[in-house]
Amino acid sequence: MAEEKEVKLLDYWASPFGVRTRIALAEKGVEYEYKEENLSEKSELLLKSNPVHRKIPVLLHHGKPICESLIIVQYIDEAFPSKTPILPSDPYARALARFWADFIDKKFYPGMIRIGKLKKGEEFEETKKEIVENLRTLEVELGEKKYFGGEDFGFVDIALVPFTSWFYCFKVFADLSVEQECPKLAAWEKRCLERESVAKSLSDPKKVFDMVSSRRKNRGFE
Image (cartoon, rainbow, N blue to C red; front, side, top):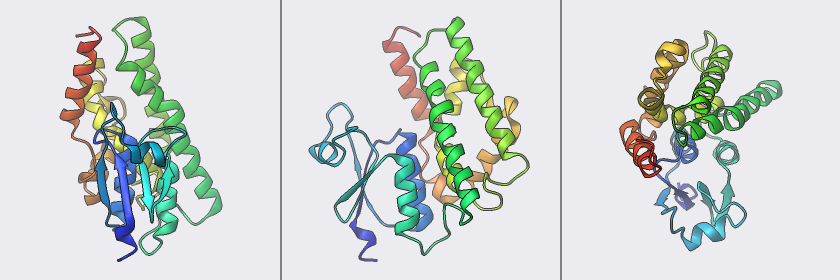
């Protein structure tokens, strides 16, 4: 237990990437110190710990910084092996999980961020279509499985579930209902929320909505 207390997380409440880290720590039962960052005035500790990207989340373990959320989640899995593994033991299954996590970051996330910065119009509709296509691709990969890795909650689930806090924004701002477009994915979301690690770590969708709404108003979109 002494080792677990040497863990500190530099984070921001609304960051889906930070939520990944929080879920992984909760799944492993790791105690840690949480430090909320002001992204407009980043702390010296954050800038020192991640001088390359200067971004959250950063995990500090015995004072050593680990950056980038998917790398952090894999580190947590390896550094705290006593609980159920996050990544599968089979090399091919592990590679497949990393592929889909990468797909989420490189294909799904950019569209999600972009649509919040666009006025309604042709580009907005194209981005909405892109989001739906990417969600459907993920739904096909999920198939009839309980979780992306099968019966066990794991790496791809942790990579994707933080973004469900933004689904309410999709519905209000883009008239995009994930439940209607991707019912199996919506059912997966509900299963994930039954896990304590997820329920306690996810950002409140209404608070995320208020944040995004405020930013859109500042851009003159509302």
